[in-house]
Amino acid sequence: MGRLHSYEKTYTRALAGVQENGMADDRNWLIDHTGIGVSEIFRSAKFYEAALRPLGIEALVRIARNFKRIDKDGPDLGGVGFGIDYPVFWVDVFPSSNTAFRALRRQQVNDFHAAAIPVLRRCGRPRVS
Image 1: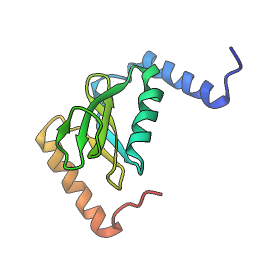
Image 2: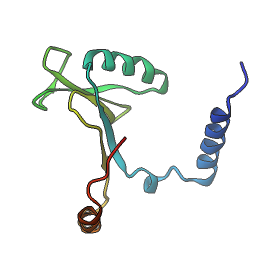
Image 3: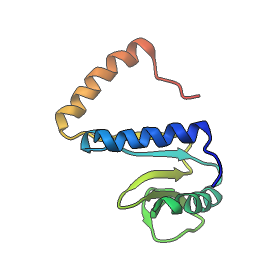
Image 4: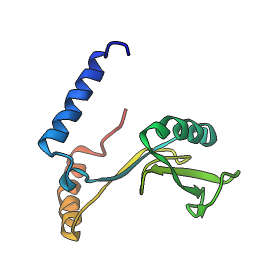
């Protein structure tokens, strides 16, 4: 086995710290799912199926361009959701990326909305580069 690069060492230390400090509990799993838009859905899905397989992640859900669930790839394939038990990472043909946060209670959703709207009015929509 070769030498670890500095980023690999940092990641390994960070992961060990997460496990030692108990940071991987329910309070830290507040992202429901994330996704990216791709221009070539079939090539992208094939790439992520191969790349994520060693992590135990597989394609769990396929959707058509009209967001209806489909069982296999076809000309109308709109997206593929990857995960272990739940699709947490999506690649799709829709033009933007997204991240969905998870709230434990409806009041948290209301509070999130109440905090975000005034900032959007002052600063405008955040831009992703």
